[in-house]
Length: 350
Image (cartoon, rainbow, N blue to C red):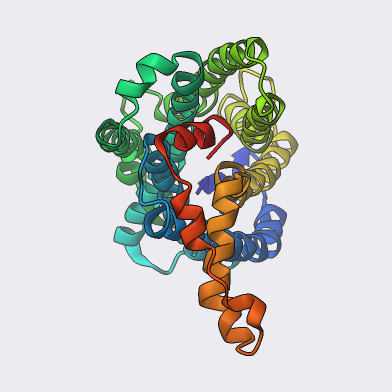
């Protein structure tokens, strides 16, 4: 978690008076725990359903299924660290130095892997629609597993600074879990890691999405078919929602890390930026709850699988004497699956 938004820090003006930020800590203790709890509940439920349906019903039969599964796992990894950060926001760090490092590493691994799998899904759709012939050979389950392993490796490497530099320290009367960079290093680690986060989490995804979706839309507009408008609409939803939720956080963190550059090196600006970090990071986390809706539940076939799961495993126990709930649609859904329909599902967002 961005430690500046969770601890009472001190910022010095030119007259060397300490900048008290007790109100920042109080706001975090009141605002973050209930919000993180809601994200935990809905994100855990939504992504767990995605994992269940992809494995049990869809059987991971395409590259898209592999990427969707990994994206859901990434979101779950990200979400499962929230109870600790929620407690930390309300109290202090009581979980020891090892947990501080592990959970910080897990947080950043979930952050980066989520970004990377969104990029992979974008490239996957680009290949399926723009280079359909090449995609028949390239978009295999084996290649999906291989690229997923590579992406997890890159995400873990990108998250190592969070694991290495985070440690427990007593600040005032409270224990904190925050990053502590070596003072004698020639590298300005805080600025470097902020730039890395913005490049990997905002700039590169933006460039790839603009290129891929521009080519996809151009191809779809040339191909007259009844699903064209739906596919274009979904593409815009994916791109717009991602940047709506993550861009404010990335920009605020960038400004906070370069306060001197933006002439914001004063106490009031620092306080306002820390409050902005809390709010924008909380908004960005909500994206974990929306991912299942964007990448899975919007697809017609996936909704049928979800309905079948609810019908067979939940509704039947809630109403044992309701005949309408005892029909089995799963076989009818599964029997319609063919390679051609799989390609069709992928092209419209499954």
